[in-house]
Image 1 (cartoon, helix red, strand yellow):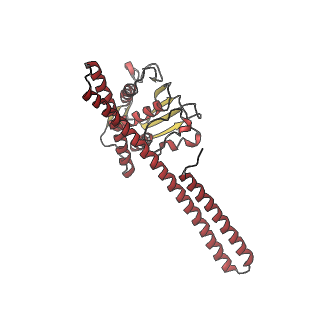
Image 2 (spheres, rainbow, N blue to C red):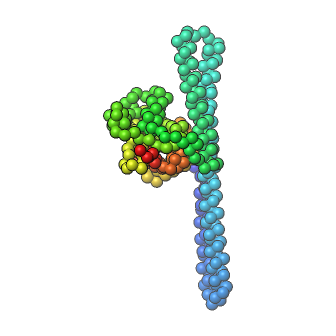
Image 3 (cartoon, rainbow, N blue to C red):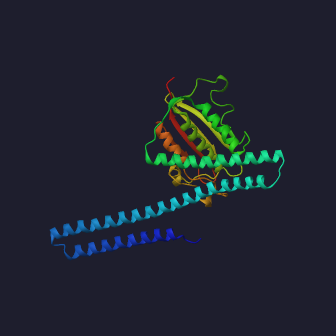
Length: 309
């Protein structure tokens, strides 16, 4: 596989930094050997070369980090461009077809539905970009906090995800036979927060699980209350999985599963789980992921404070 220009730059700066550090150490050792009797000069020289080495290490690390950040930005721009261009092209095609050809009412309604789906996709992409910008430049907080019935919101998000991704009920299902608190089972599970923000977080977790499940979608959703103070949402898929070293990276901006680990590269901007983490923190909770490894699925856990009964 060919090495990209940015990867060449990263390798170049790493090698350059290592060479400069080795050279500085060699000069330092030589200077000590030649001037070991001159105590003050020896001390100053050691400090001087230590400062040079530290500066070289910091400079190299900064350059490599900036190169990687620029690469992530380019990947994000490409992803957003695709997410915007594809539905716009589709909508234009349907409109041109309706304009130039006479189609029956059934076909017309079908076109309308497809165009509405494309506009929903466009709106979702724009909303994610705007939300990520909001998270990036100011500390998030629950704007309209109310007491929310958590299982009800999760159920609504599941129905919306089934519709959006055209899934059968069995593909996205509750971990137990019935949803929590369904048909009078136990006390209500409520959280205090912004209902719209919580819907955004739950929808992003579900969409992420579905996208990385591949062709055979099997996503289970469970809600648990391990103690009176917490409510836990677990969304488990059986998709591509995540190596242990990348479990924390998936909540960073622009992160997407590498193409080599996904048979069909999932669409998206790489902002969904970043937004989930920000919303969880704004509500006093946390989110984390677990996976047994590649091709062994992933479980994303959202933990929030539970409202007092």
